Length: 196
Image 1: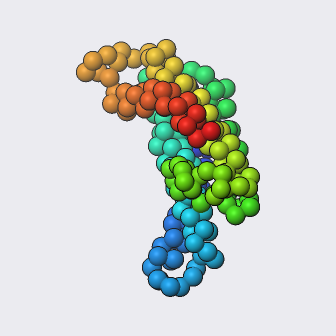
Image 2: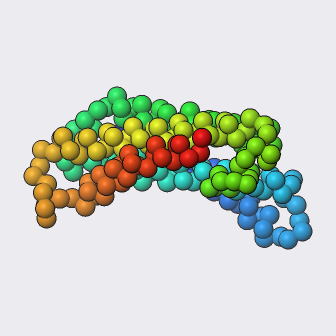
Image 3: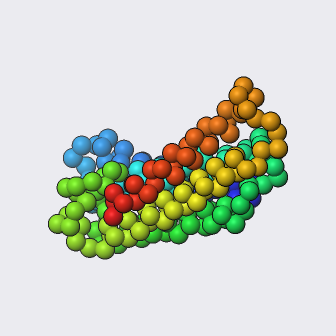
């Protein structure tokens, strides 16, 4: 449950930083012709960082990390997750990924590839500096953190249930987090290969 609390605190911090970036975007778009951000490219950098911050470092840690770590053991009848060290690894990969995301924001000109990170903005002519490489490593670490956490959630749900949870007695929260964990296990390796 301590890891869930740490996930909640990290997610709130990521959400506050993402909201401050959103405020910068709104200030720029709310006053046409005024220049709050120093260039069009920096606007792209702020949009990219805002999107990745909100997805990987606000929504995922709060909804999956915090609530999953608090609720799954309670609902299946255990005291903690089945693999506490994997749970610990899942959390501690996340601040390193966050550090690298912030580093990519401030390295060179920053990454202005949009939240999808797809060509033409993500290819070499637009990003000849190291900022895109740092961002890719950050997303790999965030994906690895999600993957380790998903494996822990799925194995906890499969191997630990003390309570009878079949058919109509299954908890919807446990079922939804387990389905999400399976989807993460299937999709993260593909997404990691796609951004490399």
